[in-house]
Length: 285
Ligand SMILES: [Mn+2]
Image 1 (cartoon, rainbow, N blue to C red):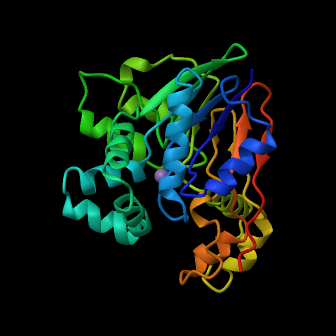
Image 2: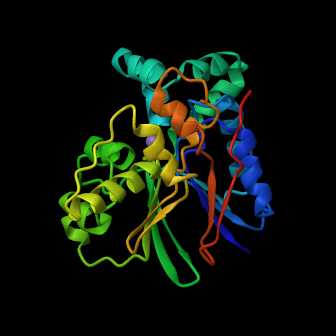
């Protein structure tokens, strides 16, 4: 039995299944942790959700799904009728296709989708080969009824860790009583790892007295030196978001997204031995 982890699938059913195929994933035998953001940006959001639901319902002991900020936006926009959230979801976060696909589902399936999304947890832990991992979509989360639920849920889904942060130190601002908790790594997604590698490169140059400026015009060559997205790992954390949202955006109006699309793919991490596998880069048409 092996244990796998993925994040930020963002409506890319083909690449998701390609990753499972790469590792010869055995449903019912292997375990799978999914760190949220199943929907939006990509073409098949509702198919991804339904596939994940299918796996989770068949093998509830083996498939563990967390909430992402995109699922939260969808729930708030539709179930709670939040106009402000709907605007952010549909326009800035490319939720429009997801909404259309959702509306095309039979009434009963729609209810099942919501029942599934609503009960997604905000964080979890797993011990693999004697090593203990903490997982959430964006920032460490611990269920705690004594805390401000809105706040701790919001940061779990939205707060952006920087590459130089130690999440186990950052989390003490919200969970001071968790000091001294020992985890091997914090596993998360939410921020495309190229942001980390680019930042790291620029900081490196600055530390050597150089003053690099990443202008719009220079961006493609800066981005090219980083190459294909890969997971970001240091002694505290593993960021698994290898640009799922940008897969296939080769003709997008936004130059950065278009550029990112050339290097975007999904990653699957095998926790047992740390091996990482990737989907192929979509070449588009
Ligand atoms: Mn996210």
